[in-house]
Image (cartoon, rainbow, N blue to C red; front, side):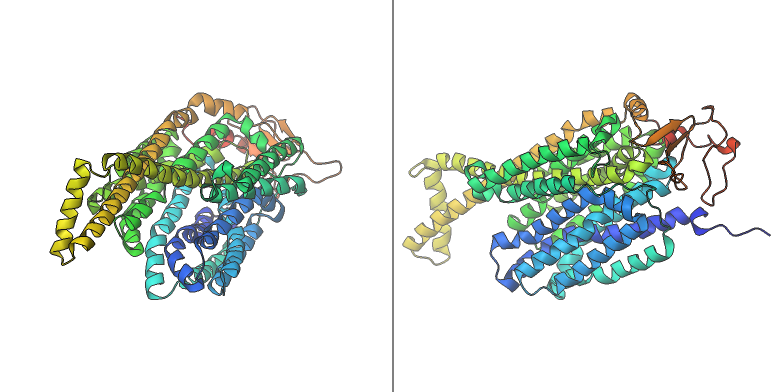
Length: 593
């Protein structure tokens, strides 16, 4: 009579795990977009000035980034399941507390708690997916994972706008609680625990210097434009502190045997190129993501709910495209899907650069759909290529570094495009002022036209003259703002195009081959023919089940010394070597194009 297989060995287990981690990721990403539409109501409730209101976003971002940086050590130490349970619990508690906030300082503090939990969710989910799915299915799995993130981005503004208008701003935090509770229950029942066999000691000096560097940099980016950048002693001091502590962090991490963030991963060519592309992705694409809602709300007078509904089709398209892009990258490699994806994104940004105050909704929708298709085709192949380039025992560290890079790039992009928007608006206003000097023919004609219309509405000649002058300056300001948005979108499109050569290099066979050879074993790892495993310390135990990595067929393996199944039984020699080359080399399934 056959014995039933344990859950972890059943074919559908990995798909249950994928659905499980998508719940947590959905809520974490949702909360990064849903809050934006509630800021005005929060400001009115607490009568808070704008600089305090921005900390509702900045506090979450800061906590999110610091959590990302230390996620690798937490995952290896506590285990995948425990880390996911803990992070989702902290996020749920932070969400409930945000809904109960009684002042701006309390809301800011609770957002920090929420950000800490959210910062661990995504890298833990990516680590779990990478370990559960073999190399030939990893792109497909990450495609479905991206679909969940896309759905949350789609629903965030629309759901947030509806809840704020009809229920109240506190409901955008309370809505996280029941969904997250379902995720906690599913994690407890479904997921199997897996821990690193020999987790490192916590790298306290590295964590302190990293936290100081990241927080100083983010604060300088947040307030640099307001305070005058290097003209402000406070901003100059923050940037100097960020640089000094950042250099100290690099020195400490390179000298530490088991670092908090493994900078030695940059020795792997595909990982290095992929991280560079991810930084550009965050800088140009995530950084410019706030521009279109700002344009639509401030200049075209759309409501938050209207903006969310306009973006919804793009999110649906992205959610549909992402799994197919992941499966395509598994079959033919990362190059073609990623190049097509970035090309679509660049096209959407260039279409945005042609928007005016008189653009129809259809024009906006076409640009948004192009970006939705591009994001869907780009993100999952790019993530799969980066994560698959590193050994499995270093995936947790690599996923944390990947997400941190994207987050820092996005923060820098927001600061860059925010500054660019203000500077370009001043530039265009100065050009218009030169053309509309007092007494010039265009100025006289424009004033006369506005004055006639105001007199027709019943104003006196004196009132009409003053009103006409005000209307001229307002029209000039709005026109300058439109041109500034067009410039910012155009620069974002150019940044997207500039990443195409790096994506082509990322998908090349030569880089894939060099990356497979460059997966140097970390300290304490010995290589034997056909097997990679951590050498036990003197008198120490053998590695935990699942730590061994198989070699390609025909590698001339010795009979499975030390290679065992999860149940403890040794693996026969005839079965060692059945893994695909893509799985061993950490490739994308297609070997690159």
